[in-house]
Length: 212
Image (tube, rainbow, N blue to C red; front, side, top):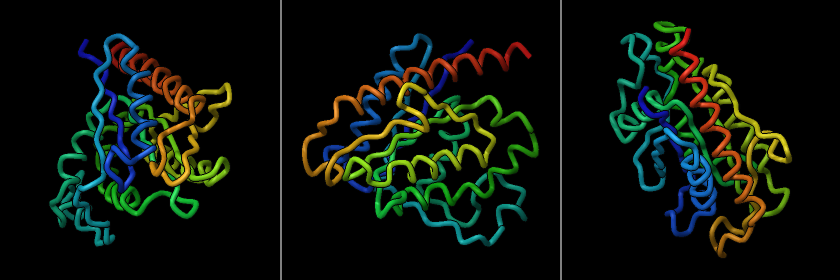
């Protein structure tokens, strides 16, 4: 069986050197890579050109699984998202919600319903997890994690909670999302734990699909 593919997406509008969300994602990637038979791919939304969905429904009229109006950096990201067995999304908190860049990214999945119509099990064997970074200890991380998990729920992607204090997803505290060095050892360790569990679950679901 081919290796399990884990896609990690950083929703920060800041470059990785200044992004605590990226630091959390690196820790999750480390955890995922500790599981044998797993390949990881980490992508940033920083610097990418992604137009927001305008709800014109042209994708539906064209019977397409992706936007047929805008051809930008989403063309590549659609393939990565659809081909992944597991997905980990990390996003900083901006005004108690996700970043504008991340909102534009996930608004572009209106067309993906076609995949579920053609194959009802397409998303059924995928799993997703969430990481959020707030500028205060209780700075809206839970709101961002709910938003990310809602994306998974919309597609029918299994959500990977971790228990043990990592309920909906891993939460980090870093004032200013990168204005200072990432200094939340407990939060980063939770990201590693979440990454490892998601990789294990994705691997099991992939094997299970082959056995059905």
